[in-house]
Image (cartoon, rainbow, N blue to C red; front, side, top):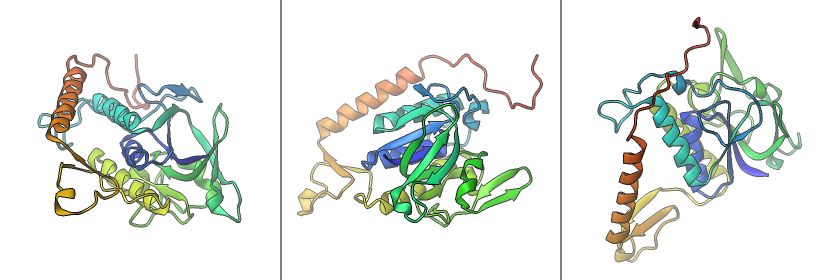
Length: 258
């Protein structure tokens, strides 16, 4: 049984997976159709809405913007580097393993694939939430879409079920979705009794030089290691941006195509 199954391979789900995987939780993302997921449970092909974005212009760190699909590919790569497993598929139904004991986890039915088991589920699948209907998490209909009611940390009315990003009624912005996905992941980490996650890499002696132990989720590194990591990061980014992406973004399904 997985510790965490995240339904949705957009920025909210991937950001959540980076945090949960790095905190040591066995994390699976079910992506409904991104560019490069390694395995398949269905022939679905809609994927993250960022696949439709021609240029991502308001994400911090990119002064002149960035191709949204390239950003999404790099985020997927980061999630996998953190230890996340990504599979292509569509979840059709989620139910408790034991109605009387939600701590026993949940069964996720998939279209064209075997069922999955997970102790906790993060729904990050805007705009699909039909698979949550059996759980009565509190779906709110607005027009043709449904949002999921959550608390400040992304917890739903059902223990062990969370929602992140636009599905949780967050603003429709990539940076907000990423931040909310991370916030929800921290709630999952807390509820899983994993060590508190700081994600703080400090220079050697930052903690130990003051007679303190290095906190869980933190790390001290030498100047030599810092330079190695910086060099590796720069080389990867230069490689990633060496050539333009020639394919056009995915058009909205309602637009007529020749």
